[in-house]
Structure formats: C-alpha cells, structure tokens
Length: 354
Image (cartoon, rainbow, N blue to C red; front, side, top):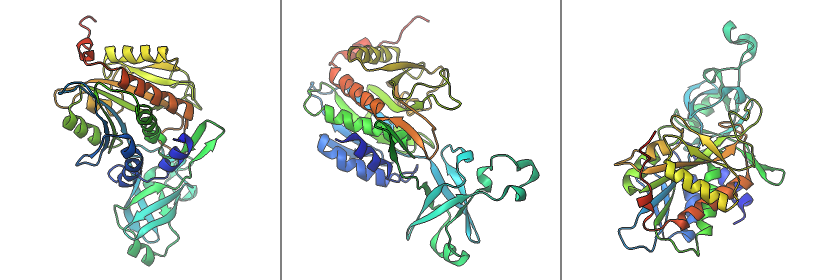
C-alpha cells in the first residue's frame, strides 16, 4: 500500500459522527482482501477479523480507532444564510473563511463560513474571536433557492483539500482519527503471512467524537480479552510545549494511567524497544479522552491500553501528522498481535501494590 495515496483518499471521505457510511464503504473495499471476515455492527462500526489458530474458544484482542470526524450541522435557515451547530469539539477561532460542503438530500452544496463585521457584533464581543453561534454559512443562493435545497439537520463538512507538506508530513481535516485507520491498514497488510494464535479484530468505530457509541457497543458485542484504543494525541507546536505535547514525527506514545493496564503498557513498551520503534510514555492520570474509556468497562471489562500518534492543530481543518509515526504505529500493532501466545492472559493480573 502506498501510505500517502491511501491516506489522501481516506481524508476525502466525509464521515461526521452519525453519518460515517462513506468512510466505512471506503475502508470495506481496502480491508476486505486483508481479512478473514468483515463485520458491520448495528450502529455502523466496521471490523476486520483475522482468525487465530489456537484451539477454540480463542482469546480475542480488539484494536479500535474511530472513523468519525468533527464538523457542523445546519441548525436554522435565515434568509440567504445558514446557522450551524457543532458536531464534536470545534475551535471557532479558525472557522471564519473556511470553505465547507453542505450535504443535502439533493447532493453536495458548496459554501463559505463567514463572520459578521466586528462593528455589528454586541459590544462585549467586539475585538474578540467570534463564537460559533454568530457564524453563518453563505452558499450564494437566494433565500428561496436555499429553502428548497437545504434542511435543518443537513451535515456541513470542511472543504479543505488534504495535502503533503514535505516528504513525511500530511495536512488536512479528519486526521483525528483517520491517521490511526491508516495504521490499521498497514498492520493488516503486515499480518497477511504471519500465524496468529488469537483472534484479532481491527475496528473503525463510530461516534467517538460525540458519545463513544461505537466503542461501547462493539466491545459489548465482541467481549475482547484485550482492547487497545489507537488515537491521536497533542504534538508540540505553537502554544503546545514539551510538557503538553510530543514531538511531531519522533515517535508514537504509549498511555500510562488508570485507562491503561500496566502489564499491557510494559509489553508494548518492551516490544517497541526490541523493534527500535521510537516512542514516548504519555501519562494519563484521569481518563484518556479516547475509545479506551468505553472499551475498558464494557460488559465485564477488558484489559485496555492506549496507543497514540502525535498530531498538531487538533480539531481544526488543518490537522497535521507525520507518516513516519503512522508507519511506526502500524508496525507495533502488527508485532503485538503476532506475539500473543495462548497463555498471555495468565500474565495480566493487576498489580496488587500501590
């Protein structure tokens, strides 16, 4: 697989929380030849299964990465303009001037996110970033044309074309968390000719940005023994120093905290060191903000872990990651899945000392 070409195509697929069908269809085409079975959950999560060779009932490991993205929806139509509401967390400071596409029942409609002139805003808002409640979408249509074409609830997606910046850095909307899905695809490729003891599930979950719904339901359905969430984390950059983020392109992160089983953390860390994969420890003293929060406590619970790819400008239309880190994540996940022996669960007792 050409990672650059694959990821550029993947980023062009719309897939806001609750409407992930286009990206799910794209992944199905690429994952089906690499899997023993493709599964789609009632909520819409997509799973590629590689069956193990151990005696049944085989232990199960689930890798989960969300395929939904942040964006907007039409909340009100006022004359020639659309009012919008957020899907997921958005930074309104970067939105004015962004090109968007409104997905209507009659097809996609181009538009532009605009802010009113500063002088017409309430005095307490003047000279400050315009909140989302005051932003509008201008499609260039008349009020009558707009009313016929658009409905409240239509999704609004950023129309920012992804592109490469240099040889290894990619920029575009939706790298949170399409970067991890690309890593899954690399891992599936790497496992093609490798024997597996465990059943290995790679799942693209839905609705992580809103309610973790995909992770909650797929973990309850599959009842994995081990569940690893793969997501993005903050990379260092403007306003994000070394105490808040991790260097872009210099390695993945391995979560450590209540949302990460200590024995799983150590196993992945040791494996990364053996494979000479650059990595950092990411301390997660509370929740991780990832699918792992749901994976860990579904049904009777599972030993969970968090693996992350550093990303700049999170939850904006111009997110940025390094292809090197995506490759590193894919390589580590494949190596971990292939290394699992039938008795590995016997090693996963929680520590009994503080």
